[in-house]
Image 1 (tube, rainbow, N blue to C red):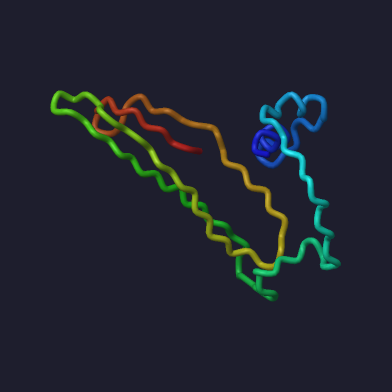
Image 2 (image 1 turned 60 degrees about the vertical axis):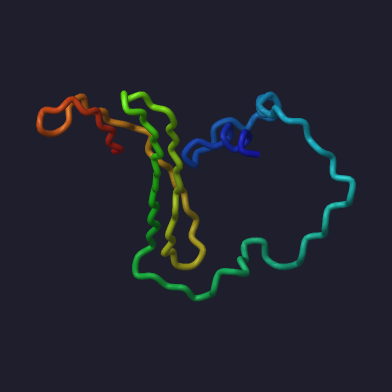
Length: 127
C-alpha cells in the first residue's frame, strides 16, 4: 500500500495514476481473500464515530512536533561504536467539523557552512 501511495501522491498532489505503471511498482506477492467481503453498512461513509459532533475552535490549526532522539556510543579515541536516530512525528489537531486537509512537508533545505562564533559547524535549516 505504501509503495502505491508513494507513487500516486506527492505532497497531496496526484502524480502517477496509470495502472500499467503502478503494476510495475508492486513488488510483493498478493494474498487472495477466500471469504466474501463484508457488506457495507447503510451509514454515511464520512461519518466518524469517535469524533464528537459540534466541535468548534477559534482557529483551524494543526501542530506537528518532530521529535528525534540520538543515541551515540563513542570510544575513548573518538571512534563511533554505535549510533542510531529514532524519530517520531506527533500531531495535535484543532480542527472544527470535518474539513478537508492537505498536508505537505517542505523538502527544501538550506545548509550553512559555518556556524556562529566562527566555528566550522554545519547546520541544516528547514524553510
